[in-house]
Image 1 (cartoon, rainbow, N blue to C red):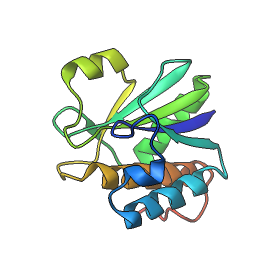
Image 2 (image 1 turned 60 degrees about the vertical axis):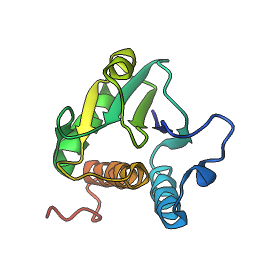
Image 3 (image 1 turned 135 degrees about the vertical axis):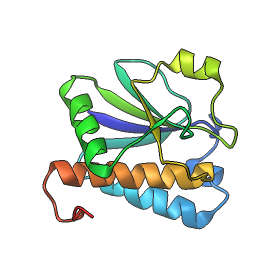
Image 4 (image 1 turned 90 degrees about the vertical axis):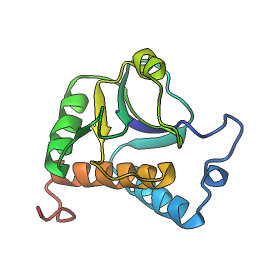
Length: 147
């Protein structure tokens, strides 16, 4: 299985690093996607496709489900056990997603980071870090100490 971070604000011809306004946010995002690639193939791209893909959407608390890191690891394990070839984690732009966009994507999981309002670039960093943390939980590695 591979993980693909689909950044809704990324234009198809744009380099990922150039799509982040903050070089520091991009640096952290890249750090965690590189760490993820030690476990699974990890890609970054534009809006999602649906080829044997499980789609998770990061969205506002009103519609998304806030979860603990341990629960996220369990959700990831379910996805890995389902036989899908790709997990796409879709992060919206500054305006989030319309109802129509969400219906079209048909996400298997609607993930919220709680009541916080985060810039979309920071949400990408949080999503990448939490996916790395979830994999270390599943592999019983010391990165996550169960706070």
